[in-house]
Image (cartoon, rainbow, N blue to C red; front, side):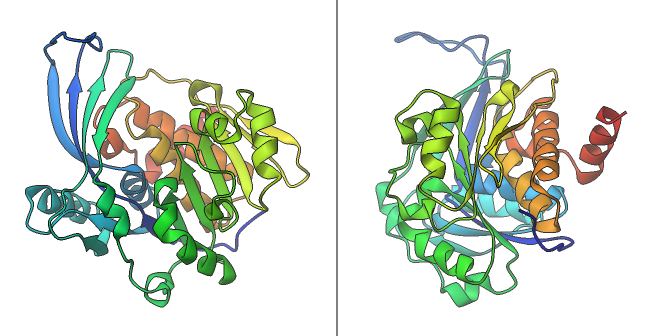
Length: 309
């Protein structure tokens, strides 16, 4: 399962940008308690947006597509400015008049683990994307958040007809009859999302259940336990996680997905692409700042070279 080599792949990232307000705290407070924060940072996030940052830094070219709030709100300007700094194209993001761009409060504890509360206006899902011909022109791969399935599955199905890979970041439960499961080439679940989707707590049994419904590659990321996946012969394989000193896990999974999309689209085989993605995510975890702490391509390659000694 390899991809024709494409240096600097052009990846269309479909998702819903989020304004992240991050707070570093000693411990998540109990109900009714107040705690001080030792640090505060305002960044932007969302699965696809974070993956786009990873793609841009790791050797690809990223474009963002999806719904946002009203063009006149401050959050929209902030997010567009941040994306411009990363060289990410934004012309295909769709402003929704009168709506608010999603916002998250992110609490990061001393172990680097994050607790997130997010508001997303349900009306954002009423978005109409640009045409498939427009979006798929000059597109080598799609990276999509599973929460966008209701408005982007037809686009993904059209991409597959054109032999364009579709990588899905699945971080919440999906229906087993959801069309995106069969309109994609690569399904990468978080462990929690996989178990909730399959209705089974076991990683292997859950993967097998989902794999029986689709021709797509299926994998589950499990943090420090590494990535479990099924090869072309439906045999289980594992890609270990790289042990690092964790400072901040916010955005690490998204950087993994972005790194995988870049590496696979470049022509790397599945094991190599997963190792590359794992290295990028590991290095991100050593730094605060969400996806903006994503390493460069050179840093990832140096890290992998050191680990190969």
